[in-house]
Length: 268
Image (cartoon, rainbow, N blue to C red; front, side, top):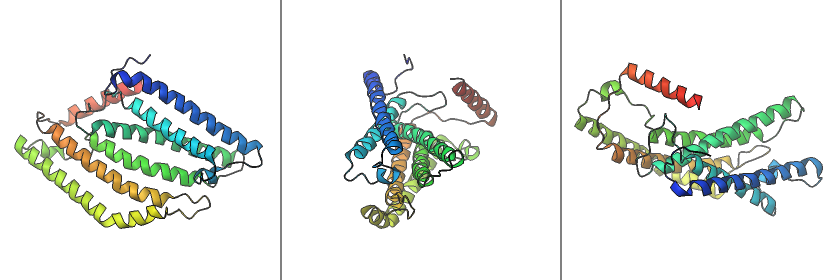
């Protein structure tokens, strides 16, 4: 039984866990059936059809099951805080933690896809037409969501040598200036990229390869959406840290604390 302290789910932790296990089992069963059908049946559904589910309800159900399983597992995993993570305190922190767990699961999926491609290519001499594009597709969201998580964890670049020398009122001023710059950058990106992103999304622009997934049509709007989420997280950080006591970051202290936290996390 998991005895770790709940971060935000509370009494819903166990039902979410059971639902995640059940939906993950359903997704694996459906995907296994599709794989076996691909091997033994003449009229089979391949990866080309997986991104074109029209007229194939089994594909739609499988994709929904996979998406639901990823979401529920992410909800469950976001309910625990590792020793090297900041405790969620802002109004947007829980949402960012859920997104970070989605990115974590997607990283595992990229590894599985590439492992499948290596085995298929070098063991069975049957390279796929979709592994490279699928890994790029997933990795794009991993990088975007990782940026949001880095903002929530205050892991973005800050020059502490200068920041720690400032009095608290000047630190707050620099934090406000940083937030304004982030929001200005977000506004400029959305202003300049919205029309292009909408055109690509509405026509679901594809990648132009044999598998031809709609990577541009999905990733381009996602960039703008997640940049907006990062900006909201920056505002949440500012509000949460406004009355916090000033911190000082000595080089020796950072090294020792970080190394010890990483060691404990790896031991778990």
